[in-house]
Length: 374
Image 1 (cartoon, helix red, strand yellow):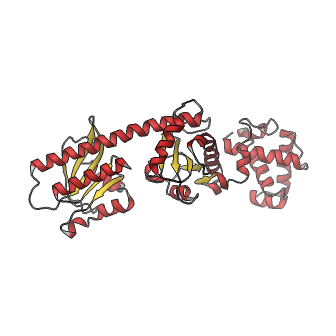
Image 2 (cartoon, helix red, strand yellow; image 1 turned 30 degrees about the vertical axis):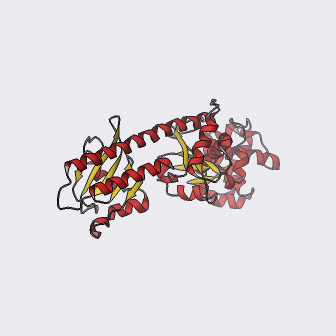
Image 3 (cartoon, one colour; image 1 turned 120 degrees about the horizontal axis):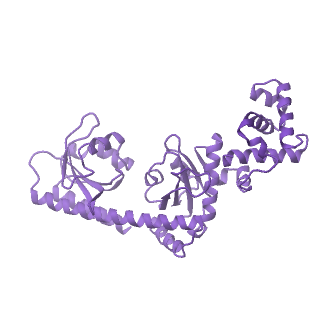
């Protein structure tokens, strides 16, 4: 990609100018580009730099150490002393700024010895400014693409959305697309899903039961269909994710979004499917996701909060194929207590649990209730 080549060229120029290894990270400390430099092997083999290159990201401890020196607001190069506790060697930070905002950082390992000439530092800082311009441009473009994705999946209308997303997708590589929906404590999508795979992303709730910090991402899946789920397995505790089936182009993003929402609902409601659920693996919940948005009138009374115990009893009973002994064991109650509760379920719903179709209606209604949060 052109932008990546520009970043690489800037970092290599800075490394050559100051005679030290250099890395460029964005403001979230995700690695963008790096350049080695011939020199003292002990200086080059910095543990923190090596981890950043291998994992594409600095640790929270290292991030906190660097930010304690005011680099987020600095308007000139900042020297960072060594910190043996985190394995950080002495460094020079060149904030990559644009329009008074810091968008990233160029880092150089301090080789020690003679000071860098002021003219070389000024030239390197100017190059960092160019990196800031590029990072700001990408951030703006990413916001615009996110808005186009939001318009596409919510049906609010944007005749240029598909073309813009197709063009962005072409820059991220080859392979089918997928939509990912995350809810809960959200990470940086570029970090979790891989910067090269994310075509567009936005944050915001657009379905009735969505949490305010729902994140939606359109990604490329050039590898196996299970690759997005594998990456998402690293989500922080409390985050749930849903992944759509793979599809050929952004024009199908709206349908894929519905699949991903159904998957994340399933991951949240049924722990066996979480924390990451994939639409092709949802089984019966693919059908249940298409049920009406409101509960069936017969099942609705059982979904009231005061009847939670009866609903749980009925669900366990139906999960065990109406096997009373097994259900009573799972619920840790006597069989007569089970029969009493089931009789109350029948009275509330008007359904006959001896009737297979009635059992099917109740079972689907209860599962839908958990998926939809009724």
